[in-house]
Amino acid sequence: MPPHYQHVVWIWLENKDYASVIGNPSAPYENALANACGLATNAHGITHPSLPNYLAATGGSTFGVHDDAGPAAHPISGPSIFRQIDQAGKSWRAYEESMPYACATASSGEYAVKHNPAAYYVDERAECLHNDVPLDPQLAADASAGRLPSFAFVTPNLCHDMHDCSVAAGDRWLAETLPMLLNSATYRNGELVIVLTFDEGVGSANRIPTIVIAPTIQPGTRVSARLDHYSLLRGTEDLLGLPPLGAAAQAASLAAAFGL
Image 1 (cartoon, rainbow, N blue to C red):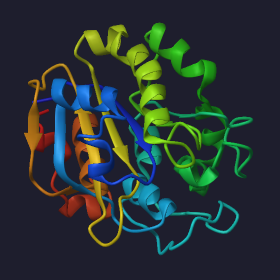
Image 2: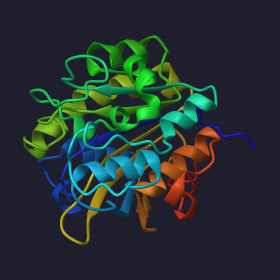
Image 3: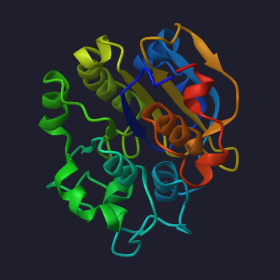
Image 4: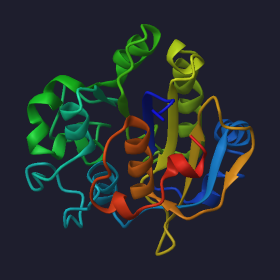
């Protein structure tokens, strides 16, 4: 049976454990989403710090990376979901808030390249220059015009992802940004899954909030199975008809866990 959903959007936030968001009155929008949609109550990051989590989710491996250095220090030649999508004749885009120009490989202001995994995969550099774009105004334009790609990676800037600013600041950004996706014809037609997650939690537990938003998810759905970034990759590949990469092959599928 072919996948029902044809588009998947990831929105990644930063450095907050589960209890810092779920049940926190400073995050009213995210908690409303969790109650209206699906919540993974046992989701985890892969490691610390940020970058290897982003690589794990997009490449099925941390590629031996243990720090947050830029693409010049870590040119990744391994496979990625970006390459898979290109090879399958599908489309992808990364929307990076505050990025000064397409596929910027150095941090600038509130843009952190360590949160932009597409910039690290050397086999995708040409495609990155076309598909890895500043968030404003491109995301709104694509959503309203029905041009959302098969796969999208949305990265708020260092304030709005809660890295440098408060949970409340990130929650307000989500409340302003997510409706453009929820109001799109792509979502209303039942073609879009949105996953809101965090790169890492705290300490060895590394438990993170993960909210899954899709028209077929029953309000208040809770999934207690252990999931991680490899599960996110596996679930997205399942939905888009792609084979699992690396460690995703052994991971529980987020899509299956939520009945997508």
